[in-house]
Length: 558
Image (cartoon, rainbow, N blue to C red; front, side, top):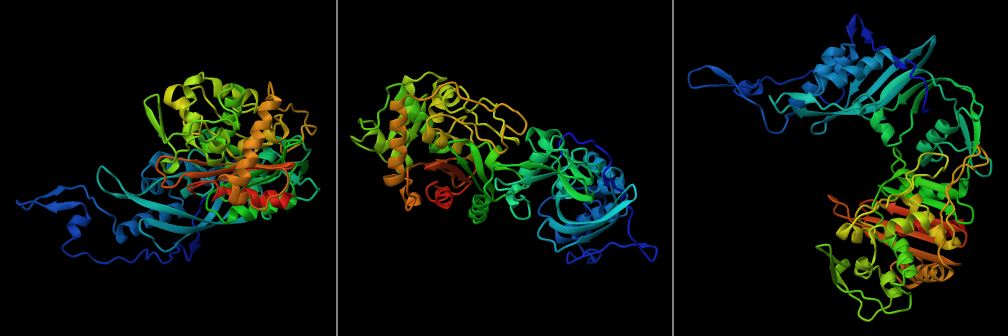
């Protein structure tokens, strides 16, 4: 899908004709029916009478009326359906971008005979359905999908216009993307699970972006033959976000090549079920002894947060920080360690959840209860790059060199100073991770050695997997496992891990995010030869939100 030839893929938008008239289909939004205005008509037209009887222009402000919304939506949809691109673009707040994409809709996507049906208005938003035909070199297929538009008031004159985003044309489009119909360029792939069964988006909804990524990387190598498709071709911004091109409609089948993955069908199905109960949840399950990815799931299917997310990991980062502090002799599991209510460093005053303190407690107690100040208090003893080096050298993170088989974000632990460096010790500041990264952290603790996670065996294409430059000492590793085991049994992870038997360890996390009422909840854990991590955005404490998801999958895998 990536690196496909940008062959024209858009349909020509000729309006459907009924008895020589354009068929503008109207739903419950009430298009085409407007009440006559009384004394307020002048204001509706943006004019007002002066004392001399002359009229002067005024800028209309305030909430949009139902009439304004339906009129603006009608003008746009009617012009688009009729193929009047200039008029349709003029009905939006970004004429240039709208004209380019709507022109491409006809010329590049080869979409014609378009019928737009408006739905029931909800405030300033108007949903609508699209039906048309994609026709390319003698091959024709029907196209149908739903979209929506929002009407806004232009600041300079108050005129109601359609707020322009590429998603108005098709919900799969991001700004800067285009629609193209033509030879796909990249042959399709048939992705298999570890047992040889076919993986499909229909059965496993979370795998849509994963399957797109597999096609982009292995379509040519797997020996398939390209077909003709209507595709979303990603623009610059989407490529920065590592989004793959996406097939919307297959006009003629290509011959797929076959790519075998490491995914477990049972665990993938269980992961899909677990995240489906949450609005924004993501989870990854690994096999620590090999690095094989056994499951990946997201409740939001448009972006693979589990592999590509870039989120503050909160207190799950304390696993890495603890290994650093133990190695440097700044903490020891059974030794007394400070956990005050507050600690100030770099002019920032840090505190614990609910401002608790542990008097005379051990480092194990601080880890299990997730005491922030126990870690922040050691910041004065560390160099600015201490945590960065630990993450890179021991856990294989933040080097941007993982080769998983699809695009991933490999974590970020930038070198920072003063308060920001201290905040990174507890998974805030500049630290960014995703469930794949944090599952790998637990896997490293379980085995003692970083093994880069992978979705496709490196034997398939001879690629080199990333390695870490060193391992933890045996003493450090033993203490770190003890900390995670104690947390799973008696600490903040105990409730979620109840009933998870075997050799277990866990850590919870909550990461504050600007503009969110609730923090992102994190959880990372291992059980025997399984490691998993998950995040629930805006969910709250990790033990209550991501914890049950991770624990359920550790049980299922056992």
